[in-house]
Length: 393
Image 1 (cartoon, rainbow, N blue to C red):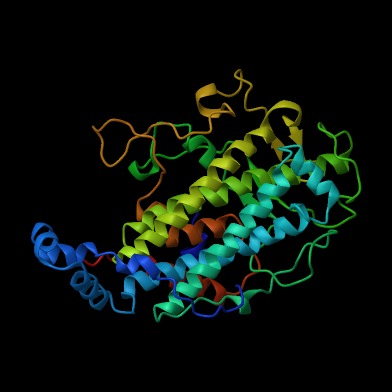
Image 2: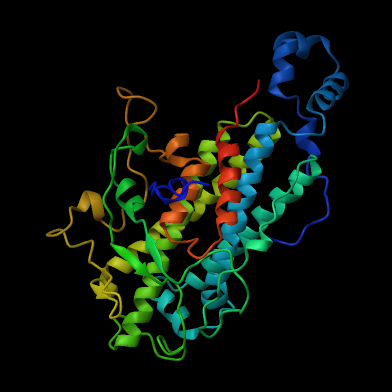
């Protein structure tokens, strides 16, 4: 694969053991698909064809196999959920409900007292998404996704982290925070708009690296008063923005790929899981603002120099673009110029929000630092196939 396939930043936007094949089609395949219904004619079918005949016809039309495009979409989404699962498991080991690093948990709770519960719940959600998508692929005769051989990246050495191979890197990130300003703007990246960074987070860890750098039993007041406390809080605040970055990307990705689905059941899966991604994003958008306001504002990491400014300081930051409690998407241009502005998830155009854009964005985030060329070839192949899918009617 060419180097430029994975190096360009697109500011948008995870394996589990194999599961037994379950009957996940159920009631949904008993619903008459729109394609078959249109062929018969809605009015005539409803009036003259017995319900049992319609259901039998639908079952025959659906068959048991996915279209090439639908399989490609679901396989990429399974890979994306495996990647997400891997990073969320790292956050959960250290900072979740049963997390093993007390100082990191305390620093996260300076953002919100319920952060450990939210982290654990988000982790459970991603695990369920990956498991379901792979099981569904198998149930429809398609190949599931397995990334286990790429679990080669090192774990954190901090107390609480399991010493096992990882798919993703959280120990040195360049976090794209332009999603924060994008959703406060009336502009839409699908029309060519670009957005500045809310916080410049470069080469910053999002999890503690080791116990020397950030002692796991140290107190973690807000604001922090010692350099190790400042370091730990900057790491937790970076995580707060990284949570939002990851989940806003999922919100756009699922929306973009849903438009390519052919099978109604596949469409149902994409929009149902995508809705949870949006829910995650809304949650983390709210918590990120607490890292750049109140007692945590103007914190600087003593090691990297990364600073979390007070975004509610209207002398430096215009309120409309930075005010921390403006967490709901501002209405923006949508579909085409001339229509009324509309509050929407954006971007949703495939070139900005699709599978390839997602992998490029994750790469620019440094999420895959240390991964092999084979890994990049594998995920980019999955991404290109998903983006190339076309809806069949």
